[in-house]
Image (cartoon, rainbow, N blue to C red; front, side, top):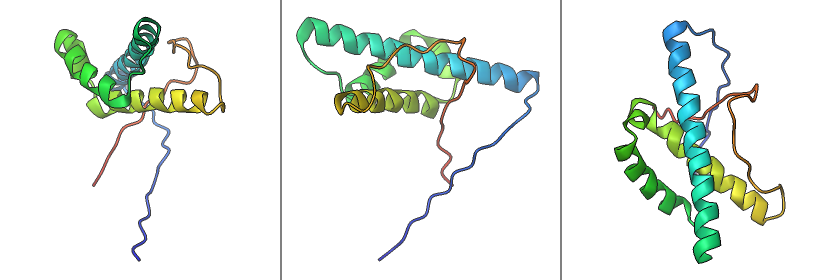
Length: 119
């Protein structure tokens, strides 16, 4: 039996101006993706009675990146993780663990995003 251990690091950083601009853009794009697909899921459910899965949203994100070129300038894994967070929020809602997902806003004091770094 093979045991796989994953490591996770939480890091506090003090970014310079260029890095701060990068993070501000990344937070904004992740928030935009989360809110856009939350609205899309609501709209599809009310109009057609269907549920948009993560894979449907992922395909739509590819099309969205073609029309919104500024989404191409940020970390793409962060955008995918934002979709995964939305899917997780809906799963928690359907399992009656939490309330219905709400829009994210930039005035929340905690701004974060998740990315994958596989080495």
